[in-house]
Structures are given as C-alpha cells and as structure tokens.
Amino acid sequence: MTRIRLIACLIAAAALAFAAAALSSAAPAAKPAAATKTAAKPAAAKTDAAAKAKAIERGRFLVGVSACVDCHTPGTLFGAPDFTRQLSGSELGWQGPWGTTYARNLTPDLETGLGYYKEVEIVNAIKGGKRLDGSPMLPPMPWQNYTAYSDEDLHAMATYLLSLPPISHAVPERVPPGKAPTGSFLTFPAPSAWDAPRVAGADSNAKH
Image (tube, rainbow, N blue to C red):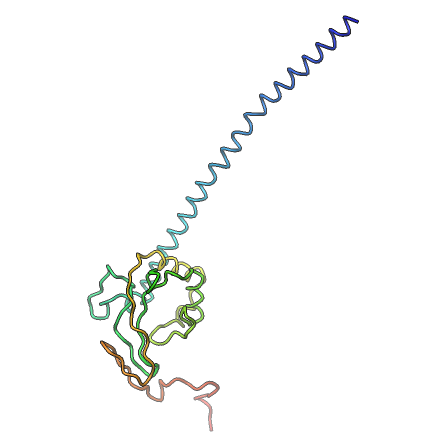
C-alpha cells in the first residue's frame, strides 16, 4: 500500500511540475502580441497623417492652378494679392445679367467661411454647381470646369481649404438683377447674340 501511495505521489508531483512549466512558458508569449497591437496604433496614425499631408499639398496645387486664388484672395485682381489673407474672399463685385456676385470666404471660419461644413459637402457643392446653402453658383464661378476633376482631386481641394487658418471676413451678399450694388464692381455688358445663353431645347443650327 505504501508503495502505491508513493507512486501516486510521484505521478501527482510530476503532473504539477509539468503544468507549472507549461504555464511559465506560455505566459511570456502573450506579451509580444500585446506589444505588436500597441505598436500598430502609432504606425496607423503616422500613415493617416502622411496621407492627409499629401492631400493638402495636392489640394494646394489644384487650388492654385484653378484660379481660386485669383478671385478669392483680396487684391489679386488689382495686382497686389495679400497672401496673409489668402482665400478669405473679395469685395470686388461681378455685375452682369445674373446680378452682382462676390467671391466668397473659403477659409474655415465658423461664421463667415467654410468652418461649419464637412469635406464631402464642399465636394458635392462643387460637383453640383450649388453653394453650400443650396442656391446656384453664379458667374464668374467656373464650377463647370471643376466637375472634370476626379473625386480624389476634389477631396484634396476641400482638405486643403479646411486646413487654412480661419479668417473672419463676411463678403457682401449677392445683389439681384436690376438692383445697383455699392462699392467696387466690374460690369459685364449684355451678351451679343452669339454669346447669349441658349434657351433650353432650342437649336441655333437648325435650318428653317
């Protein structure tokens, strides 16, 4: 009986030793996995920051070559652009058959600029030819040209605009046709027959 108990004790001791060894070898294995997961977060954040920086630079280029700066930066059309107030809007009016319009403040100022709008809303406004309040974009805004840009390019432009320092500047509201504007404005005469807007459904080349 004593011999049987001795064997049983030896077996139990061996089992305990085996279990302890298994636990001690398994415990450290969890640490590298946790460390890898923690290290992935800064790497992902770094990748996102790099992608955003690239989009901003692409947007800066596109805004520069698309004449946005010409109209929306004060002083540019007078030969003296003020880049400390870049894209903060102009008070030079553009008067024509559509009334009188002004280049809006494109900085992310919350009250007078684009600050309340999301990137996708700005993109959709450009693609649809409508201002962010839903009203149509009027001349001289060449929104039809910008619809040729890819969604990626338009998002880059919006990302750049939202990265600008916000500048508080409320430009004059558009003036309807027939009402005289105040301040400085350029006047476009009534169009000739060749340049007149075509009536929907009309065919100027049709033979009668």
